[in-house]
Image 1 (cartoon, one colour):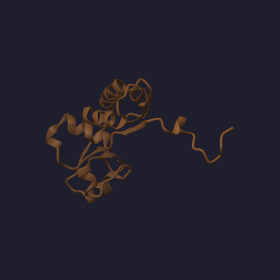
Image 2 (tube, one colour):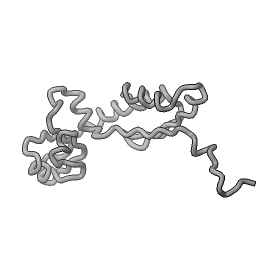
Image 3 (cartoon, one colour):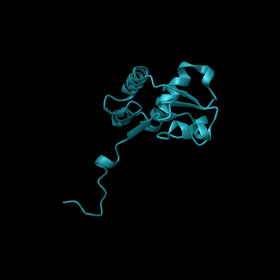
Image 4 (cartoon, rainbow, N blue to C red):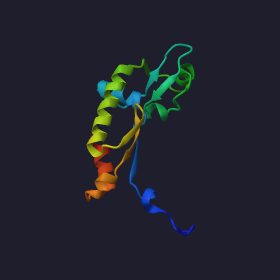
Length: 141
């Protein structure tokens, strides 16, 4: 019988990694068009009823955020470059992201195109440090 004050480390000590590719849609657009690097970029609808789906860090620094109406975003950042979404391209990049993640662990759970949890316990059993693996994963992504 376990003491109620004893922490069960069998589950809590598992190295679980959460990966979130922030500003994913905007980052893919910049990746595909390097001329956009350093510029405020948003992906979404540009019309009167359009909404920002993703904003680059440069756009965020100017007050542009996801779910913001595009007309409001343009008031905050008049030089904002609003691009239409290319969801088949984002799916391609997401598949590549998951392929890279699978190099580190066979056990992962995608949450969305740009987010997943990965169980790194198999690495620790091999003597690989989970933090070092996470750093390498970040570099490869």
